[in-house]
Every structure is written in C-alpha cells, then in structure tokens.
Image (cartoon, rainbow, N blue to C red):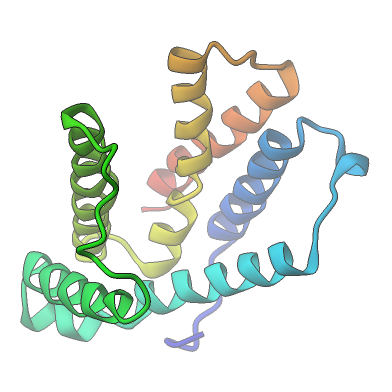
Length: 175
C-alpha cells in the first residue's frame, strides 16, 4: 500500500499458504473448536498492526543508521516507557542463577538478536516478503514443542508446516 503496488501472484499465493498453514497448525484442522474472546481478537488485530508498523516505519531510518543502533535505541526507549508501569528494580527473591540465565537467554536470543536479524532482512527483502516469512514463528514453536515437550504432531499440522515452508520456496522463485 505504501508503494501503491499490488502484491505479485506468487506473493498472494504465499500469503494464502502462510495463513492457511498457520491456521491448520493452530486449530489442528478443527475450526469449530475456536473460541475467541473479544480481548484476544483485539490483541491479535493490534499485534498485526504493530507488525505492519515496525516493518514499514524503520526503512528510512535503516537506510541512514545500522540495525543495531536502531534496535538499541528502540529497546532503550521501550524499556524506559515500560518502567513507567513496572518497577525494573522489583526483583523476586526466589530468582536463582538458572532462572536469571533463562531470562537473559530469552532477552538476548528471543528478542534482541531475532529483531536485529528481522530489521537487517529489510535490507534484502521487501516488507511483504519479510512479513510472509514471519509465519515461521509458529512453525518453530511446534518444532521446539516436539523436541523439548514431547508434543504430538498430527498430519493436519504437518500439512500446515509444509504450506508454511513452501512460502519460502515460492518467494525464492519469485526473485
């Protein structure tokens, strides 16, 4: 919409595959069992709008500054803002070295590095391609649940995973 350009046919197919694959993984193919509260619906819509914003907004800034600088300043200001609502010095007493290392790992790998890589990908991919490829997150969650939590994986979920993975190949073919 920003460039006043419609997605290509392959991008539209990728979007359809990504949505369908994610839906199959989340619902396990049973769409009648979905119970969605108004709060969950609003959270999902807000999340989607924020994703669009943080994909499109930093492009001009990233052309001038490195992704690590943008990320660092963003996290600093975000942390200051959140500190207005939660005291960062209010540390629970039951925290131990294991818990602290797990929290720091989530912050470093799950947030800082992941978002830095995402911002850097905008140098090489269009916002549409970057957004489509983010559907790999639920797929990664499924795979990690299989490995670490011994969760079972149904054929419907496997079909969803294949649809999600196919978006990568479709987008690569489009280039």
